[in-house]
Image: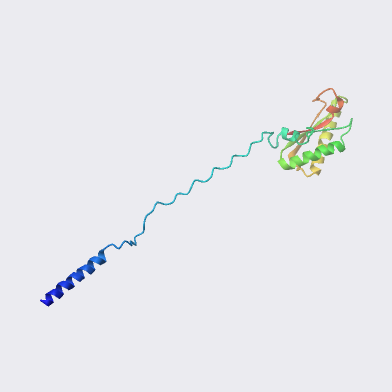
Length: 172
């Protein structure tokens, strides 16, 4: 009878051990699936810089605004002359800087007053236009950016002789 008692006792202890091995102890080693953390949205971009409305870079208006006096596109010549004087050099230096910065193509127009024959004034206008071009090229502007044309006395801008004796730089 004692053997039966020990046998039942051993069966109960074995069953208890087996059941306790299968029981959940609360320390579950399976990974816990959590919702991924959502990053906050990025801050909004800064407001755009204000757009300054002005002349387009490389335009005639841009050239005309190059000097404070607004005369950056015109140099004047003495009567029957085509040499670049000190005033014209200052204007042409500003033009040269502008041309190098913008790479714009320009046409230099040579003009004369109404005195003299048409042929003479065409030739003088050509010398004036080329004097302006040569000065700009000497300042480092590529000659390929500059064309010249002479209008002689054909396109006056008024009755003032001095105003008509000019070299005018026009953006192409």
